[in-house]
Amino acid sequence: MKRFILFVLFGGLILPVSAQDGADYSFWSDLEDDKKVAFVQGYYTGLARGLKILGQEAARMRSQDKYWSPPFSHENSAKRISEFFTDPMPDYAEIARMIDVLFENSDNRHIKLETAIYILMLHHGGKEQRANTLLLREQKRVLKGR
Image (tube, rainbow, N blue to C red; front, side, top):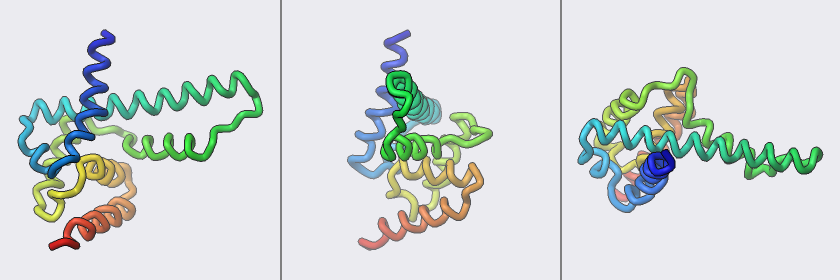
């Protein structure tokens, strides 16, 4: 079981970093559908585990000092990670399809995969204006060099 968790964390934490060396679109488009779903599952497993660790650490510190409050960086990190989750959460295959649709537009093909997922989840979670602003900012950043 521990090896499975390590494998999933590896997929969720290491692959996104290595995927960002080149164009994320080519990395993503080269994956088969089942591997795309596995990638998204690993990515979300890593995010959920990170969020859980932050919560556990805050609880541990509070148990040691009842006056302890989490630093801004701790709270901000938990907030940023939570933005990748929506209610209701789409299944992993649906997220993979959403990424495919986003990357169909050639203006979006140089957006980092992590940013693409973030934009999609903001939009899915009802924060369309923020998602659209971020998408336009990323397109402007990418297209600036053309």
